[in-house]
Length: 176
Image 1: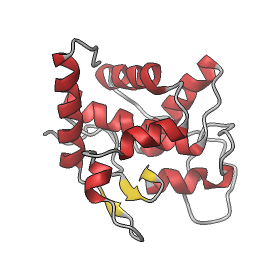
Image 2 (image 1 turned 30 degrees about the vertical axis):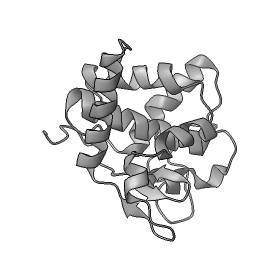
Image 3 (image 1 turned 60 degrees about the horizontal axis):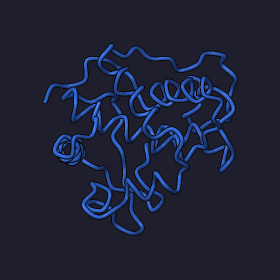
Image 4 (image 1 turned 90 degrees about the vertical axis):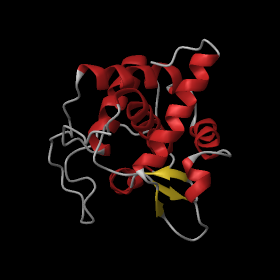
């Protein structure tokens, strides 16, 4: 597997998905956004063979979580995320309005995965997405330990999504 060729983080990917949500006029909560970022990251590993972002998901009691994104979005609680994430929102200091949204660069192939992730999962709520990403056989189920946050290895996430992609092809389902 090749290393990521960019310096995007979960913040930039979250904003790419938030822009899709805005275009569709669909409110997205922080919990939903976490799962969408995980799904886009996983599908990109399977389809393009490289990480989409630098961040690695952790298995938390609430699901697959990106710590940096959690820190940036925690002030929203269960409410929809109203604005794009700004650089610095993830820092453990009092939030200063920077006015600079975290906008990343994604290749055409990566953006195709982001777009397909949104069109496939964008209408799901966080409970539905969490059930899908925490079920038996998932990397979450493999690595979750109560009371701990455990990094889910990139290779385990990739292998799981490759298995899903192969199963989709076997059923004639579109993958990307």
